[in-house]
Length: 203
Image (cartoon, rainbow, N blue to C red; front, side, top):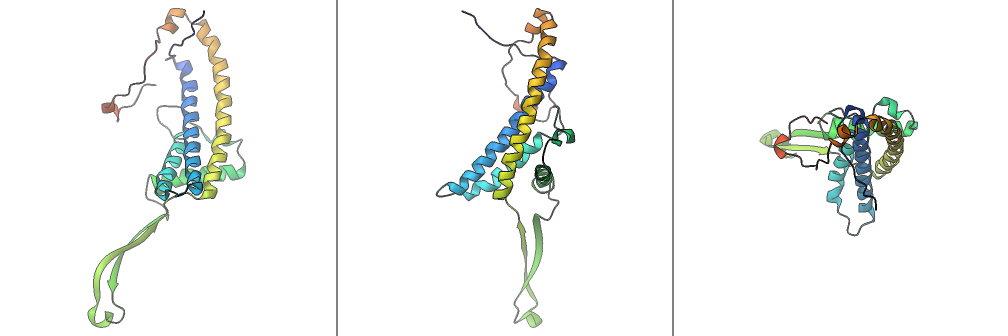
């Protein structure tokens, strides 16, 4: 009986492949959150308190695939296979995340101080108090969610093709390395240290 196992590849040649898997996970998560959002339309009773956090989760998961950091990220070149409508969805999601969710920039939020008064007595009484008015767009729409599902599915196919190409490129490199060097990578368990929350990771 044969026993198959694995070894971690912490070598520069494997970095892009590892990063592509992280990107695929982000796209999958954005799509999963979008499907959870749509499920609220068919659930009785619907929990409408979830649509805002799910919209935020969708925007951030999607944006991670295109955001800089330690890992490789998708670029304009990766959008070439998308339709014009899908590219518009991509830009909307990036702007929704960057200009509304992460930073208060666009008109999706309005905060206004107001002076309150009695219409009939304003001439004699003046203003009675100071208050607040405004509004906020709290979630994506059903149509936008459908577009998210479509674009994440298309981009995931694109990323999976890159993953396959990277696996094919990497195997001969690993096979040409000394066995003891490859096996020295070991099998490290994923155990993040909470105190390292602000520290840049190596891989």
